[in-house]
Structures are given as C-alpha cells and as structure tokens.
Length: 412
Image 1 (cartoon, rainbow, N blue to C red):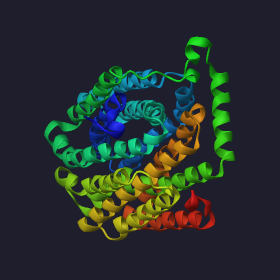
Image 2 (image 1 turned 120 degrees about the horizontal axis):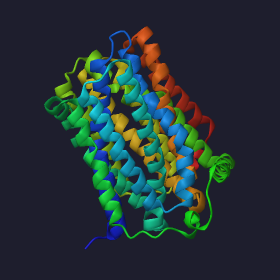
Image 3 (image 1 turned 45 degrees about the vertical axis):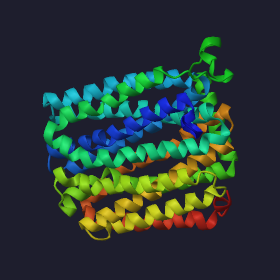
Image 4 (image 1 turned 90 degrees about the vertical axis):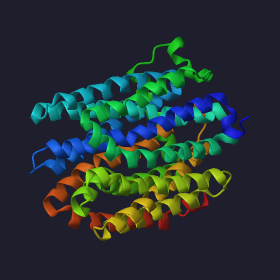
C-alpha cells in the first residue's frame, strides 16, 4: 500500500508523532512570548521576551552534547519516550503557572527555569530523533525520509501559526499552553507502538555503567571528529552563523516586531506568521520531489542566501507585505539550508558517532536562542526599528563571506 519511507511501519509512527509535535510547537512558542509581553513591566518587557530565547539557548547548549552522547549509547526509541514523558510534565507545570496568575519576580524566575528544563529535554530529543531515521530507513531512503519529515512538519506549521492567535484569544494563555502539551502525550503513544531494535553499540546501559567520565570522553570524541572533517565542520559553522544572527530577530523577536512595530493584532497575527510555514512547506515539497540531488552544498548555500536576503526584506520597512514576503523567504531558506545540511551530515557520518555529530549540529539553535538576549538588550536601547536592519545586513555579509572563502561547501 505504501511506498518509499512510508512503507516502513516504524517510520510512519515516528513521522506522525513528529508532525503532531510540530503542529502544536508554534502554539507553545507564541503563547510564551505573548504571556511575557502581557505581564512584564513596560521598561524591561523586551528583555524578558528575549530571556525566553536565552533560557532555551542555555538549556540547548547545556544538554545538547550530552544528548548526542546518550543517543549513540542507548536505545534511541526508549530515550525519545523518556524525553517526551518529561516534556509532558514540564509543559503542564508552565501551563499551571500561567493559569495561577502568578507573575512578579517569583513567577518569572519559575517560568524561565521551567523553560530552561524543557529546552534541555528537547536538546536530547532532537539529535536522537535525527539519528534514528537512518537506523529505521537505511542509507538509500534516508534523504527521502528527512525530506518527508520536513513536508509533514511544514504542512502542520501554517495551520498551527494561522490558528495560534485564535486559540490564545479564545482560551487564554494557560489553557492554550496546556493544549500544546497534548502533542507530547501523542508522541509517547506512537513511539511505544514502534518495533525498533537498537544497534549493538547502543546496549551500553545493559553492559556497563555509563557515568560522567564516559560521557565526557564520548563528547570529546564527537567534537574531535567534527573538527577533523572539513565539510562537516564548515556546514555546522555556516548554520551557526546564519542562525545566531538571523533567528533571534526573525523568530524570537519576530512576533514582537509584527505586533508592536507593524501593528498587527494578536488575533490576526496568524495571517502574517503563517507565511513562514508556507515558505518552508514549498521548500520541503521540492526536496521530497527531488530527493536524489548530489550537490547538497549548493542547496545549502542557496538556502542560506535566501534566508539572509528575506531577513533584509522582513525588516526593510515595517509593513504587513514586507513581513509576509520576508517570512515566506525566511521559511523556505531555513528549510533548504537545515534539511540539506542534515542529509549531507548523515550521509558523511557513520552510525556510531551520528548522534554526537547531530547534537553538535543542533547547537546552532542553542546559540541562536542565546543571542536573543544581547540583541534584545541592544534593541531596548536603540529600538527594534534601528537595530534589526543592521543585524540583517550583518547576517547577509557574514554568510556571504563564508560561502566565498569556503568553496568546498559548494562542492559537497
């Protein structure tokens, strides 16, 4: 009945859980931003909005490399189940905090601590989820499977972004956040239905203790491998540069730009932000239709330049049309760069070190979240309208310099 990656039962379950999580993820993200924006003091609200990204970034950087080491040593399906169960608890705790009406210093400290812990769990989940796909599908179907992953995610994302404003407006912050946690419960159920059998190298838990020393050694080996492999190293550095400069302004501060600078109401904000999902969907569908492209490096470069150019459009003038067109290109460019980078690295890296390399790759998101705070502090001082165009041109220049000086990326 099914062909290609969908013919694999385990992949169908993994894909379904991932798509549902992606559908509810934007609701969770936007609810956090708008809750802080609504309850924070006026003189520091932008900095506190940025602290959401900073909390996520610290969690991702703190737990990311450790998560990759775990993914290479333990049953990846069981590891995903554990992280999703813990995410159910952390999401529920944040929702209850919002429902209780607690704000002030204590409320915000607790909120940011829970956000940090959730980001740490997601930093373990993400490289594990990426590393398990080649295990399930094999090398021939991995590229198609990763592209299909993105198609499923991007089909869900426009719907999620479009409806987020209506859900928050109808249910309030707490209940909207509680709804977003149902995706983790569904993911647990689907993971439990899988029949995945781990590789021999992932039976460490049954054979010997795996403590801090072993973890540090595994992390050091992964870092050394990435440093010695020129293409892998520069793909990671390109994405770190692009995301660290571009993502804080377009994603973490993007809703704030749209609602405060452009002047779009929360209820109708979904019409604007859904353009990001539509652009990402178009790029993901194109990658699924043409899965066997050899020159992945050229697509990575195209995606990075499209992302940076669209960032310039997004902040060039505070209008709805600029926001829509910018989001459309940002979504397409980010998908092209991220998906092709993931596929290329998975093709170059052996299974026994794949989790660690994917965790290093995922650090680009951690650094991106961390950079939100200094950008927001500068924006609080200069204003968003002054700072973000400067950051946009800086991002374009930095990415262009890497592509001009590291031509091996284009040949990869």
